Length: 154
Image (cartoon, rainbow, N blue to C red):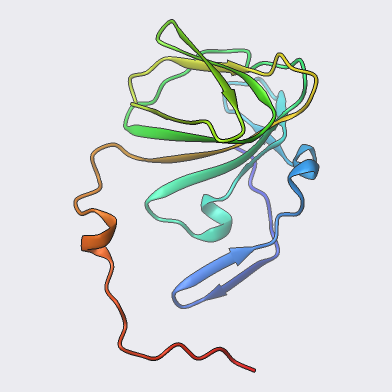
């Protein structure tokens, strides 16, 4: 996997980075261990750069007319695909789903998947991976309101 050194901002309880415009995602490249040295442009993983401990997030750009050249599934991670711009098709367990801006798809680890951009414009999407079954409280139960009054620095 290609590790990207992003200009990150970090504190005790946070980390952030500026990755640039989505249209410039082609400047990032991912090298899969089984890809025989072949890189996949337009894929930026954020786990290491942001010191995430319970999920992986990637920003993705699939050029017009391109497709992922393999099927894949996971051992333990479910994935959430959030499509931001463009259109294409997602194939999972022999079911084809048309995707476009606003489409979201959750895939269980066992789901065999691939996708393509058969349109004339680039397809932009975010993928979030997390351990399947690891959430033990909903967002309302896990959230705790801090007693401090909100005060923005001048």
